[in-house]
Picture 1 (tube, rainbow, N blue to C red):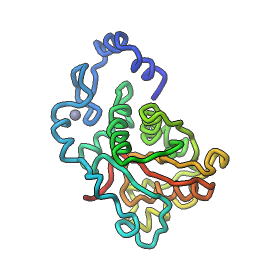
Picture 2 (tube, rainbow, N blue to C red):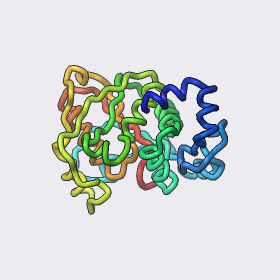
Picture 3 (cartoon, rainbow, N blue to C red):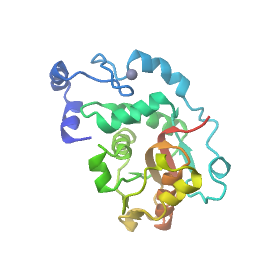
Picture 4 (cartoon, rainbow, N blue to C red):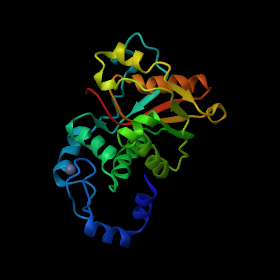
Length: 236
Ligand SMILES: [Zn+2]
């Protein structure tokens, strides 16, 4: 969230005047909505179909890659991945001036609370500096910063990405995805990790390779439990 967006979110009169000139957009599909709405009626109708049943958690050990060691203790997501979520991630990344991070994070915060979890610090899957500039915002960081406010937990940049990688979406299978992100993250401050229960935030979770590699580095730095909170997970 940039400082202007932060300023807008705190000032309803300024927000009203701002939206006289710049339309307010749906947090999912970026179509124009009324000022008192965050999500358009079409997306609102779709949301119940996307809901994850929290009673059936992701089974990391056998669902994605049986050869991979998992460093994540639990994965929580409010939604299954779908075209509506794909649009939401796109809106989050490229449309400035929307409250989409706040709106999407509120669904994540609800799922986190419902799961009854407790964490000490929030961090997020980093992008390399070059990629953030070239591809809009780091959507994981936007969600993490919004969650920090909603859950009243500190958000720290605990990880950095040390080199560019091929886009995970362009890899062919789970093994390639795991290889692609191997050894690309570094912990910024070990002292901030030690014995802390970590809430690792990312946008989507397909094979989980990115989140697991982040978790591996955090684990090596001595963290306690690592919970991964994402907007959407693949496969029902
Ligand atoms: Zn919409």
